Image (cartoon, rainbow, N blue to C red; front, side, top):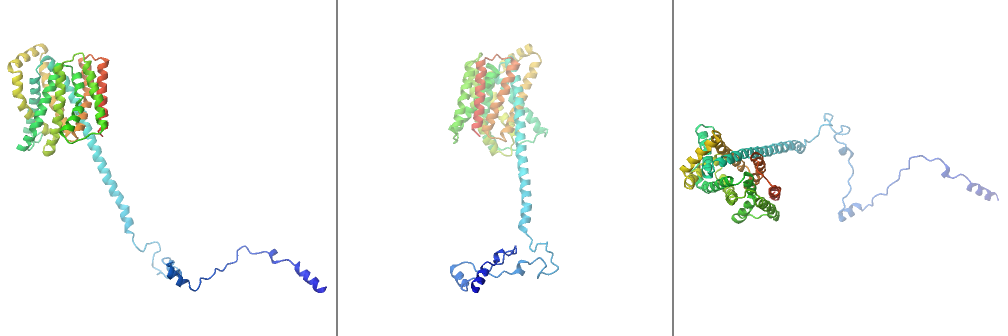
Length: 402
């Protein structure tokens, strides 16, 4: 019995689980690596573990084995790649800024050329129509325009205002087809202006992109996307609508504008080629030489078509009706003709013939509006609609060519 009671007492004694335990867990012993671990890793290709070197990992902090005179903040090896990376972006940004400035300056230059070109063209068309109303001799009027420009450039070269171009025989040979096309287009446009209103001539001449596409398609190995051909439909349709509803329609005036379109397209293409070959001759001098050769070509034809006797009689009649202002009109239309063409060739020297053709078409908006206001040309709503459709087609054409 005594033994049984003691045993029972021992069972009800408080266990160790009721005693307070420390908060930190007891360190656990990891199982040791097997003795043949190095052999297994060498056979299986697994990287073997190496003993951690505390002294090598703490090197550079001057606490263990580094020399006392070493500055821990100074890198032991200079990072040259970082230095190159820190300098290089500055050079790239500078180059990019210079290139952006050149592009912006070029766009501004072309914009000034276009604005000057259009303004001078408006003035020329006004005075040209005034002269032709009082003096209906387009062959002499065309000749005087070329003569005035040639004389202006000869004086500029003689007085050193402009540097004379250095040309050779090959340059003048290449200039000959350009001069022929320019002469035909110039006379045809003047004949059209003498027969119909200024607005009607320029509405028909707004179809120049259509001629540009046809010439480029059949005379040059150049294909266009379908959008370009579709944009020609409103151009042709608008010009046709304006021509059908024109109150003062004249077949000679209509055909003159159409021939002028075709001739000027060839002139622009030949001019661009000639200007590439003769790089030493700029746009201003190139047109000066073109005027002189065109004057040489046109003069005998003007004499044959009209003649000095007709010119003298017509001149006296115009002066008696208009007065001395008629002389100013002739001088103004001749001078402004040369100036606007000179600026246009300065533009052509910077852009493509297609862009030049688009700019030449868009300028007609200002010419049409100005001529309607000054000459009080009667315009029917259908006629205005045709002009708007043609000009809108030109805008679509310019977008399709981008």
